[in-house]
Image (cartoon, rainbow, N blue to C red; front, side, top):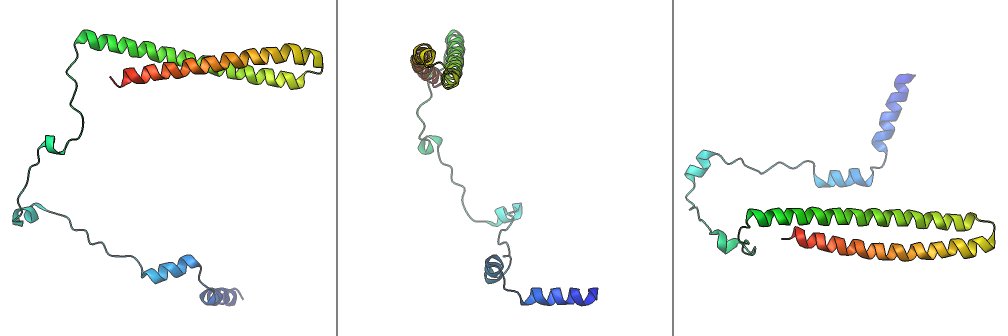
Length: 153
C-alpha cells in the first residue's frame, strides 16, 4: 500500500505545473561554464604586449598635500579635537536629557487630574524645557560643525 502511494505521489509531481522559478531555470538552459582563464607566468612571457607606466600626477585628481606640520602644531590640533569632541559629547548628553524631561512632562500633563495645576505649572515647565531643548540643539549643531572643521585639517 505504501509503495503504491509513493508511486502515485511521484507520478502526480511529474504532471504538476512548474512554478515560474522552475520555468525560468529550465528556459535558461542550466548552469553556464566559466570562461575565466588563470594567467600564468608562461602566458605573461609569451605575450608581446608592452608594459606602459603612467605617472601618478597624470592620474591623480586629489589636491596637493598640505605641508607637514610641526610637532607643536600637531599637538595643539590633537588637543583642540579632543576638546571639541568633549564639547560635542556634552551637548549631545544635554539634548538627550532635555528630550527625556520633555517626554516626562508631557506624560505628567496627561496623567494629572487637576486642570488648574496641569495648565499653569506643568504647561509652563513644558514650554521652558522646550526652549532649553531648542537652544541645546543649536549648541550641539555648532559643536558638531566645529569638530568637523578640526577633523578636516
